[in-house]
Amino acid sequence: MLSASDPIVTLVVPGRDIETFAPAAVASLLVQTESRWRAVLIDDGSADATGDIFAAAAASDPRFTFVRHEASRGLGAARNFGLSLVDTEYLGFLDGDDELTPTALARLTGTLAETGSDFVAGAYVRSRLRGDLYVPGRVQPWTAAATDPQRLGTTIIEHPRASANIVAWSKISRTTFWSDLLFPEGVAYEDQIVAQQMYTRASAFDVIPDTVVHWRLRADGTSLSQGKSQLPVLRDYLAALRGGIRVLHEAGATHAVTARLDLILAMDLPPLHEIASSHPDPAYATEVTAFLNELRALPEFSGVHPDPQLAAALAW
Image 1 (cartoon, rainbow, N blue to C red):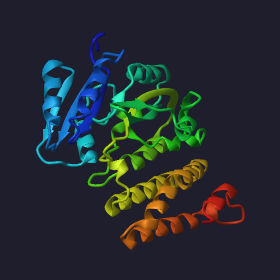
Image 2 (tube, rainbow, N blue to C red; image 1 turned 60 degrees about the vertical axis):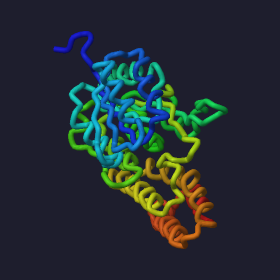
Image 3 (spheres, rainbow, N blue to C red; image 1 turned 180 degrees about the horizontal axis):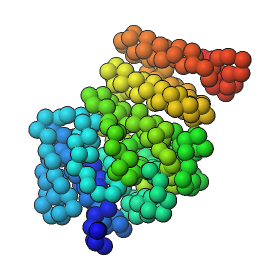
Image 4 (tube, one colour; image 1 turned 90 degrees about the vertical axis):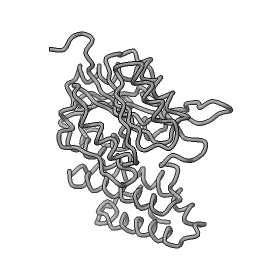
């Protein structure tokens, strides 16, 4: 039986070459109003002082466990390794260059304790450099549509717009829910397919409008999500989008597919078209065009009654 001080949630926190940002991630755990947490800090082959920062945190607070990968295994593999060390009732993820808000763990674990759902997802905001400080912005419309208003014990059929919240680090799950879930390894955007698997496999999940994470948009453009002009990154990105759509299709979550496609057309494709228009490698435009043609072939855009909003967005 758990005592009042035993940890109830484990955060898997991977990072590579993030010495500038890792202290803030660690500090955001230390100020949590829910103190019954553990965190697995994974240095994934850093060439800078990230590992030293993580090791110092573990030396100063027993709630931290430090793991060093001498060579980088990638974010998916690092998260999967962290999963193998979880022995608490709940689990979650935090990238080592992001920050939890102070009440995040209290709200997320408290919601699951109340509802018994498989997982809970909260809102998040981008944090951008303003002067010398990173300043959080507002909740973006697609995130708000996924998490506001609060819905407890819902499903992807009842709440298809939840499919817009595709990140790993805005959620806390029951550890038993991850018995057959793992992140793809060796690819970028490894959380997108897993997120849709979570939505479609859950008996019930919760969404709350609280901002639980400040997601750092690095000023130097070095984060993975800022590297879509690189052809290998683009290919992983499009593969993740395809995989997420496929998961929703296979689950029969028709309205979630439409909601996801609507967002992809509005938010994902326009920047890719802009990059493709001036990219020195013609293969970039070829990849984007092939993906667009795949979307045009989906049943949501064909048949007797295609979705009019999606059909209009495809008429480029």
